[in-house]
Length: 489
Image (tube, rainbow, N blue to C red; front, side, top):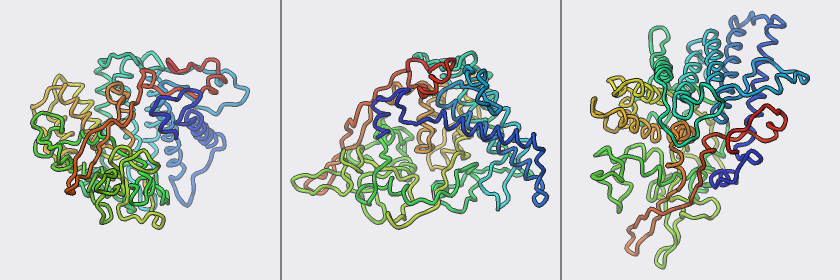
């Protein structure tokens, strides 16, 4: 499987499990350029039955050009900036060199600004899911945050490649200030004097946004809409519920959910963690995000234990066998717990941006701007923590360094399974410490029916500095002699 090859390090520019996203993104960029040029060339008229529709579509195309360039930047760093359709005989453009990361960022921001000026602030009911002004602000926030992070803070100014050395201290106050301002623009965005985006008030309401068909949550800024699918739930469900255990959380993650009473991670001295009862008294998000031994799904208590002389194998046994969890956990957060595998289907809306991310973006960036976190930093991170039902941090209780760690921890928990962690550990340059060993939770059912739990190594996952950036597919570098491959690939 591609995932296993990625995890064990057996990938390269010749054989990249992610696929040829370089090609796919540039196809999308070419389509965007073609549309924008066609509108100008043919003086495309507005729709008289829907005045303003042409302007809106131009805004959407500007955004999509920015979005696909940003996707390239996330993976590869600085890339070729293409703002026109390229003819097959245009060898100068076809053989162009990569631009610096910051030059690409400037193009993303320029296109987002163009889109912002053409798009509405909110969608009418019949246009739910289309791009709005707020979506452009969200992309700017995410990418300015990435640009300010250690991988790109200094290297991105003059190079297409990040700083993959062990140094994690690279920082630029102007970049952090820009990231803080971009995040605050999302948080403060209003229409007709009222906030457009608002956090759901409870954790239960937050959980519903991953399942709802209504598309009315004010926490959701943009989503990939209406994929009718029954496969997602089957892919995620545990083995004993006819699932494929396709997203099995690690003990690395499970062990980072705080103890509710002390706000300490289980491994911290004085946390109150009981190894004999590892799933008791945790951050409430642990129970919305993760399925574990004896958790209930569809009226059944899950069984992750192996066969013993006394007990038969649990229905959800932790195992390397096909469709079993290898870690002793299964993901709960994104599944529909009411689904009947093989029968029911649902419209899946993949959330791309939601407001909680931007509270944490602001807290991270503003903390780096200041010598110590101010009230606004605490307010931002506490908005997310309080909604989750965990204790807010006391203003003035942390140094800048402690708040940095707290924000990174909060992102790990609040945004779990939403596609952030892979990029976060790279932009922070901590993957060499966080990635190399995958741990699981082994369950043994004792003769008296009780359980014994043991943290066990599942596998080693080699991480080399070159993995902070994704290799460009080799056939692309062969076509263009000026297209330099990322370092050490």
